[in-house]
Image (tube, rainbow, N blue to C red; front, top):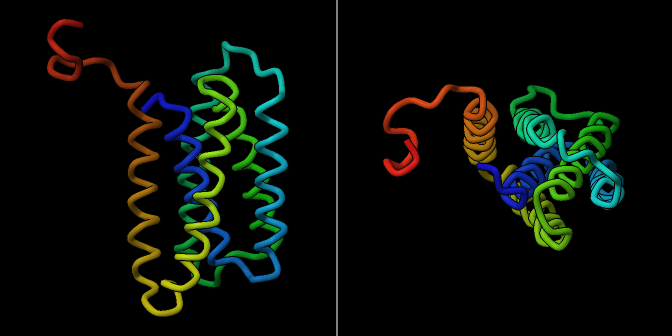
Length: 161
């Protein structure tokens, strides 16, 4: 899971879910914050030695944004914009370090798609949002933990052992 595109895409998807449970007044500012922060971060000079930390921050951001779906009272407008800023910064940084800048343009529309879908599904069948967010949390935690686990036999292909 060292693909910058996959990490940014999942972070944008989790942000779309988070904005779907936020008040309607926070959705446009949240999307603008995500776009501005990610664009700024993708052009910022990020040291190449920070790659592991940036990927870890990205995966933690996926889990945090997806977990907002499980909040009992929903997400407040200020927190929605703050989470969007955070997600934009991590998505831009991960793409700046390990991918092409055009990958960010491909990942950002996923936020809009999931926001629209989750808004509709959340009204009719709210359990679907919780299932999707739980899946995102599980994948993010696995991707975050895997680089820190020692390699065991059978984990790598035979020619790399």
